[in-house]
Image 1 (cartoon, helix red, strand yellow):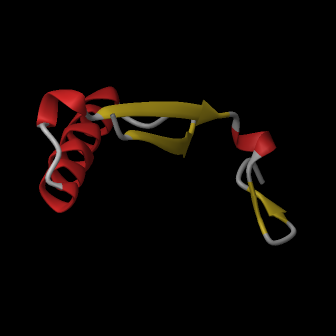
Image 2 (cartoon, rainbow, N blue to C red; image 1 turned 180 degrees about the horizontal axis):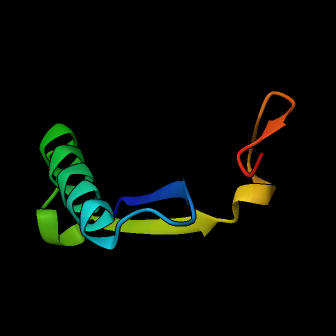
Amino acid sequence: MPIIEIKVVKGRDRETLGRCMKRVAECVAEELGAPLESIRVITVEVEPELFAVGTRLKSE
């Protein structure tokens, strides 16, 4: 059972996240030859002040 974790900065649109999760599951199932119903996709939201690129916080 493949398990995929996606981390995103909090505040993303729920519908967009849902579509993304479904597409990831479909892609993984196809590439691994695994049944779609065996794929688990988890989205973890990260607060903007806890996410940085280099030395710049997303919240800045």
